[in-house]
Structure formats: structure tokens, C-alpha cells
Length: 285
Image 1: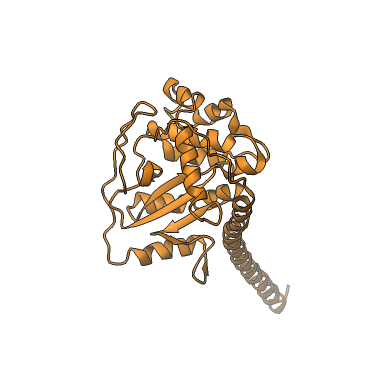
Image 2: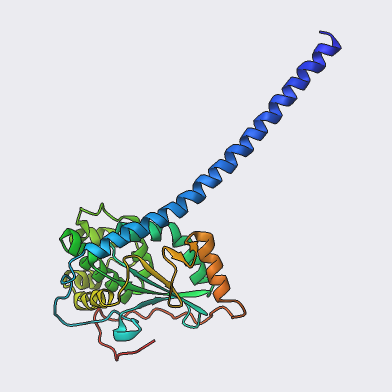
């Protein structure tokens, strides 16, 4: 083989290798764009579905009477909020949601890691409010039953873990699987230490049903657009904040802007489980 031909083949191999590297870089950029667009798309889709859910529900549903037994540690007006995070965090993220609502699951599953990071680092505290609008739309009682079970998990100091498991295992919207206690017990088994006789009694007895119904009434009278409703320090950020659409990066940015010059919270409460439905004096926050 002549020296000229050998050099030519080496040059061809070099060009081929360079082209492969360029293609890999293009593929990586494309995957990054697809993932980013998917996150934004998921949150945007959630907004649309949430609006439909709220606007078609029967406003008379979920207003049943019964004793109102707030879960342990509930705060706010009428003790309707389940708080998560440092009590002295500089910003508050308020979330209204329904465990049967597909839009809520899309939001939670997309934003979960970010919300946990912001909460665990003391940047925000989260106040969860539960609604039952899908029961009104689709029939059934899964929204109510799951919300009661989540409140029972709060009694055991395990609300966050069970809340996440419910959304990670949400059935299709027409399937009222959460109406079955057995399904809620099955999912509770995924949370270490939750599936106890006290939890099962709380779920089967509907200990917090009256509280859930009162929370749903507050949602109905709150003039919210749909679920999920997400507020940062009282300002709506879902599906957008001003001219900016919600995304993971924008959520981080909005929290950073709200917290500028403020110290992160450090007062993380220690869970103190009580008997389900143990009455406590009303508080506001």
C-alpha cells in the first residue's frame, strides 16, 4: 500500500470518527430538548385537564355532614392545611389537589423531586389542601377515600411518603380503585411502618371524611380555576406566573426570586403521631 493511499484511509477514518462524535452531540442535544419539552408539556397538559375537572364537577358533591376531625398537625383556617417542611421557611407553596385527578398526578410526578429538594433545604414549606372534584365528575368515592387515607397517614407522621405513593400508583380516571380500602392498604404497605391496625381503622372508619368534605367546600368557595391549584406566597404559578409558563427551572427561579435576601428555614417539626381523629384546639397560620 502506498504512503499516499494509507494517509488517505487514515484521513477518511478520522473524518468518519469526527462525524460520529458530531452526531452523538446532536443526539444528546435533541434528547435534552425532548425531555425539557416533555416536562413543560406535562405541566401544561395538567393545567388544561385540571380546568376541565373543576368546571364540570357537581358543586353539590362532597358537602356531606359529619364530625370534622382534623388530622394531627393540620394548620390554617379551620385546620384544613397539611403542612410539610420548616415552619419558618421564607416562602409557602400552597397546593390544592385531588388524588383521582390525572392533572394532579402529572404535576406531582413531574415536580416531586424539585418540591422535595426545596422543602428539605428550607426554601419553602408546602401546605396541601385536598379536594374531591373527580368524585363529583365521574361518580364514586375514591377522591374522598384516598384523601381520608392520606389524612390518616398524616396522623402517623407519614403523609408525604403516602401522598407520593398514591400519585405514583394513581389508577385511570374512570377506575375508582381508591374507593376500595383494600387498594389503599396495599399501597400503604409500600410505606414502611404505615400499614398498622390504627391506620386501617382510621381508613375503614372514615375518620377524616368530614374534614375532607370541609376542605372540598373551601375549594369550591375559593374561586379556584381547577386542580391542581398551585400558589407561591399566595400568587398563582400554575399554569403560569405572569408571562412565564411553569416549568421545573421556572419553579426554582421563582422560589429563588421570592427568597432573595432571606434565610432558609431551619425549624423542621418532629412528627408526633396521635390517635387518629384526636381533637385539638383550632389554630390559624
